[in-house]
Structure formats: structure tokens, C-alpha cells
Image 1 (cartoon, rainbow, N blue to C red):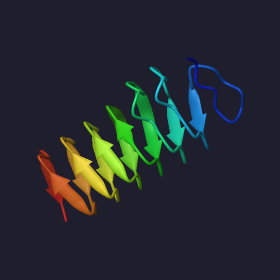
Image 2 (cartoon, helix red, strand yellow; image 1 turned 120 degrees about the horizontal axis):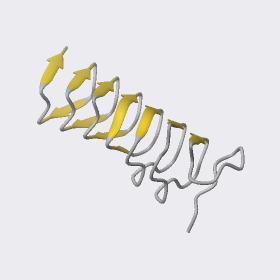
Image 3 (cartoon, one colour; image 1 turned 135 degrees about the vertical axis):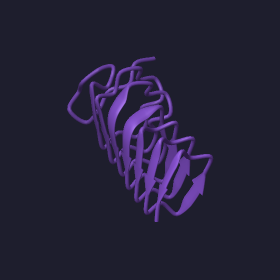
Amino acid sequence: MTSIDSYGNTNCKNCVNCTDCTDCQDCNDCKNCANCTGSRNCTNCVNCSNCEDCANCTGSKNCVDCANCIQCTNCQKCANRVNCANRTGLTNCQC
């Protein structure tokens, strides 16, 4: 199953306003997406419902294994976390 973003891009190189990005392996930009759980190389996760293994998570509801978690609802196993609602198992905490 191939996920297609709002611009018609397959494999979600640019994931914008997607309802489902769970099948995307290389999502360069995940913005306002309902699901980014399958995006293993998401350079930017912005306002997504779920972000896993992303380089940057900003304003997302769930951030897991991100390099940077900024103003997210949940940050787990992230290298850096800033102003996140829930912070667990993170390396650096900036409150």
C-alpha cells in the first residue's frame, strides 16, 4: 500500500495534510498529518498526530525517538526536549 500526500506524491517525500502516512519510509516533511508512525526518515515533523524516528518534532501530539522535541504533547526517547507537555526518558530537558 502506497501513501499519497495532498500533492499526489507517493512515498510521502513531502507529507502535508495527510490522513495516513504509516506506509511512508522516507517522509522528508511531515506537516499536519494524522499519522506519521511509519515514517522512518522524517526530517521535519510539524503538528502531526504521531511522529516516530524523526529528526525534528514541533508541536506534534506524540514524538518518539526524535532528535528534537519542541512544544510537543508527548516526548519519548528524544535527544532534546523543549516546552513539551510530557517528558520521559529524554537526554536533555529545557524547561
